[in-house]
Image (cartoon, rainbow, N blue to C red; front, side, top):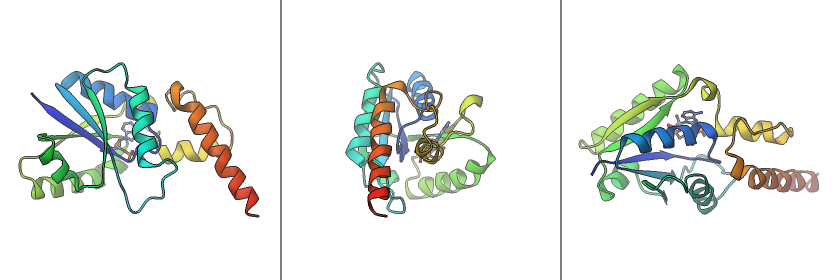
Length: 168
Ligand code: ADP
């Protein structure tokens, strides 16, 4: 059974992420979407919340499992019996960084390879950070986020705005 892992921050999961999940789930027998802890980022949603949001939008994909981990990705993949990491590639700007990570992961775990799926043109420019930026200005997000999670996202933006304004 070919098991692939799709790692990321997913803060929150966007329509671009979901597109990669759907396509990778068609290629592999099983796809594990893993929310990874990134110490350098201060997330809008907790790890558990991000896992729950992804579960909600992938409920119709029977071979997709959603998990969270603070392990090293190469160790996580070994533990889960996977030898493939799936990543989405947007513009050339993703390439440099992703290439470096793929080499490092392969060095740490030589059985592990990274496969890239190119972003669909309508999602080329889309990132979680851009969605968070747009959200603060009340822009319509239906082209950027899966419909089922928009209310959660708007609620969190409103809470953040309240905290910021309350702090002034
Ligand atoms: P973001 O840059 O949105 O914060 P993540 O750290 O959650 O992204 O990214 C996880 C993976 O998803 C990475 O491989 C990233 O290149 C990919 N990805 C992010 N946004 C898109 C998109 N719009 N289309 C395709 N792949 C994407």
